[in-house]
Figure 1 (cartoon, rainbow, N blue to C red):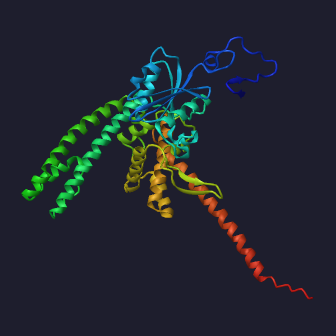
Figure 2 (figure 1 turned 90 degrees about the horizontal axis):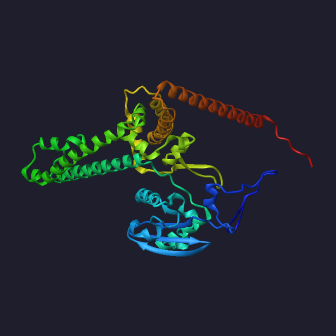
Figure 3 (figure 1 turned 90 degrees about the vertical axis):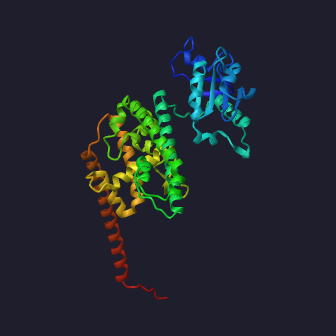
Length: 413
């Protein structure tokens, strides 16, 4: 295929005849004798205000600024010419995607990790107006790196998990504040689970001044517990309609929250070709620099931070469970002996991602025997590599010994 200006020329195989009428997709791409795009190239920069920009033939056709997508109905509403509309991925992007589809347009959610490749932020000039224009020009050139849009059910699951996370974080903040106030009064409160912290604290004999001081926070904790129970009940109801959530819980260390979060982020196991792609998507693979020589660093920490934190916690639970007879724990312990606990736990979290993805892809439950066989093969390969290294070092040492034993040869002049 050769592209010249606004025209698209397709080189046909020998003997092939060009179709008399273009297909539906071709009619959307090209139109008229001049081959101009029939769909408009539009971009939106989302924020406190939405910046609208439309580009055609390399020139800006129109601009607008609105407080919401509904205020752009004159530019993008029903009955307007169809457009490809690009916007950066964000939580608001889900609503924008649905609204644009309702209006008959093609939404293009842009992968934010690759926005700089399009020219956004170049020359230290980054405004809503410039960003919208850069995106619109990229739409016209067909250079938009698309982000995955979650299915409606997974969007709802993700938002429910977000509400639960906010309540848990709020309760943890209240607990930390109460402990801080108690320490200021010379009282150290005993450790306990967060859900029964208020009841345990009320059962402790405190001086009246301290009890009166922390009582408002204890009341708030009890109210948060009530709301958290309601949210978790709704989360269980939503998870019950997702068979894969129950399937993933067969893996060690994976509970209802971890499995639901994994499903809400990955969305579809079959959109990844390998476990390594999922691990990279969640930021659990080592960073790499190969400009001079291959150097591996810390994990990239890209992707969803909340899910990555949950996976690390799940890995710690597997690692610390002393009574667990699981091959993944045995693998992590052997790695910890060589590299330390923290590296081993991160590696265990990365491996747990691969196991969960494989369970989802194959529709099977967790089988420790299969994981044990894979670990055994890995240990065998590692042992073989060590044997090869030892043999190579022995060969090098013998060369040194022979060199030392050989007499020095002098040349008479």
